[in-house]
Image (cartoon, rainbow, N blue to C red; front, side, top):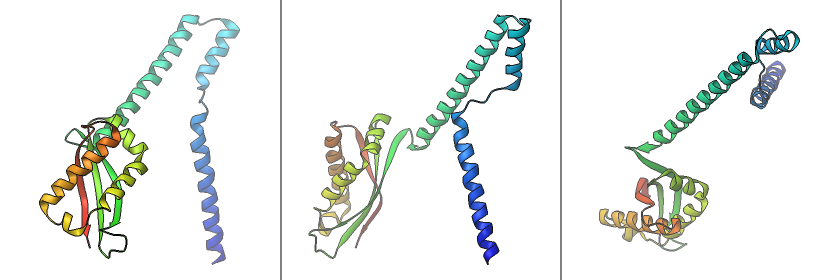
Length: 186
């Protein structure tokens, strides 16, 4: 038993050591040994013209730019993967509210996702998620079970949520649609 605990601690320490080294490796720029020897040789003997050295450094800069472009494309793909049919969907957290009054025994559990027009709106919603969640909780807690019991009332509820959140964003068309992935009344 003691050996197992010691082994577990050793593995944990090794994991922390490795993660700290690899997480900090991006802070330091790696130097290619061949480049150092080339620079030292040119400074000592001047056998390689400076134009060749400049060309090598330009190639390195172009490689770095290409790498950053590929990383940007990957992040663009992440944004596209968060969208449905070209639309950006912003998921919200689960919301549970009492229906009617505070002492009511009925409650609503809902998960809302918002379809937005552009990435700026998506960013604004994600940065202010607490405010949007508060507006949703405040709005949904005013409803009672009878008011949300039919399909027509759900359509009306979506429209009212969209209007409320669009006012918060300062635009009538920032949020295109409101989706319910969970809607449980109990």
